[in-house]
Length: 103
Image 1 (cartoon, rainbow, N blue to C red):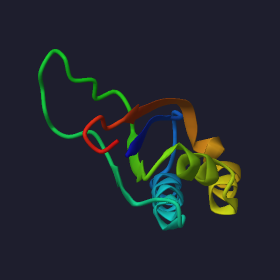
Image 2 (image 1 turned 180 degrees about the vertical axis):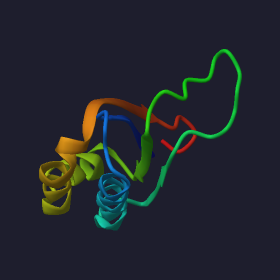
Image 3 (image 1 turned 45 degrees about the vertical axis):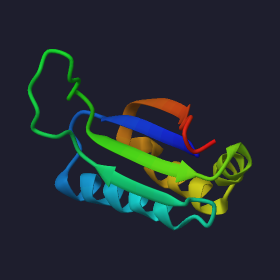
């Protein structure tokens, strides 16, 4: 199983409507056929020194394999999300990792 985690930092001054549109765009990615499972969220109210809560939205997607991940990357829904929502974030960091038990 390949896990694709993306953290997004929102641009300063986004309106509530902008944030709502950003979230709708993120949720559209969950419908891409190669996605096995996924979720969209905001930082949890946990407060420990090792917890980074500076991001605005998180996306976590699971794929059966790298080929499915690569298919997601070129899916028209993914491209449309990027075109629609790139204006909302100042920074995005991607963490891709393989679940060693599910290999």
